[in-house]
Length: 365
Ligand code: CTP
Ligand code: MN
Ligand code: MN
Ligand code: MN
Image (cartoon, rainbow, N blue to C red; front, side, top):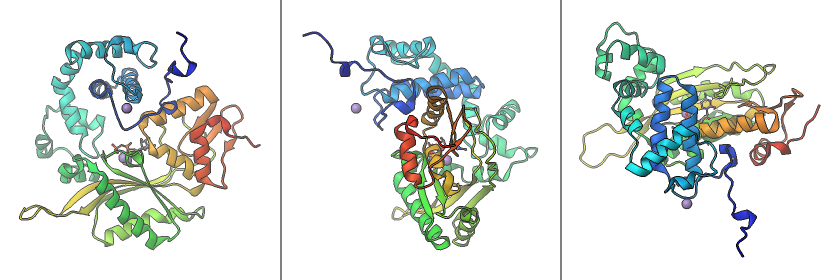
């Protein structure tokens, strides 16, 4: 008969954390367009449109099929008039004129180039653009500009850092980090996080969470790790940001809540095999992030640093709107009761609980 089984009626959640997303993207032609429009909106500080394009891209990435007509969009969340118009343009003409305009835009091209330098944010890029610069050479030749230590490293290792990091390189860095940390604290916990933990084939950096099973011992880890890497002669740049953790503070309501853990942004020299007979340097500079949360917060730090950014954003939004809780990289809070929830017995288990269903958390107090 003609009745549909309930299970065949697909409903797609508006929350990325409620959607199954594989590495397989069937809608790349659309998501690439949205990524460009989101980036341009970000450069123009249009937060609303930026978020809308990122949400739309995230939703299309989760679909098990390619969008082939506007009929396929019926019933899908996260798509507004603007994003639908882009999809329809691409369906009809193979490209979207709005996207083509952005790609040809002088300001977009230049801000994209300048912000691709490690240590250069939107404000600095704009300043350089307003000076009339269009290339990195012009910027570097200006004696009036004072570059930060980070930007100097950014220019020095620009070619290496702007090339993608592949999985094999991430694994090689992981081995170095693991071995070096073992020398400092044999029982330390070293976890690869970020895009490579999500199974991505390449990334812009390699992210690690490092902690000790004993609370408080983690405060020594990063400085000692940095010392050791320096002694090995493979540390090209580092910037340790000290912990600003205040347990009395409630989590921030902003989408991109910065955490208060001690962290280190580094550039590490990775030895590589040379192709026979080629004259080139035998190493590649790789961007590496280290975060050292206390073991008490490890589960939440791991959840927060695994990404993707959209997944994290939607997980916090889900916690707030659907569970009346506040989630950040430190803990999960009950918005109404203001009790700090944590399961200290087994942080890995606690993480699984958070992932499977925020509602399954019990309250104490
Ligand atoms: N993150 C965070 N707080 C920061 C920086 C990052 O919580 N101050 C989280 C973000 O949710 C992000 C993840 O850590 O998704 C990893 O950050 P990043 O390395 O910037 O992104 P990846 O997803 O690893 O992507 P890429 O491959 O480009 O590195
Ligand atoms: Mn598929
Ligand atoms: Mn990363
Ligand atoms: Mn990172």
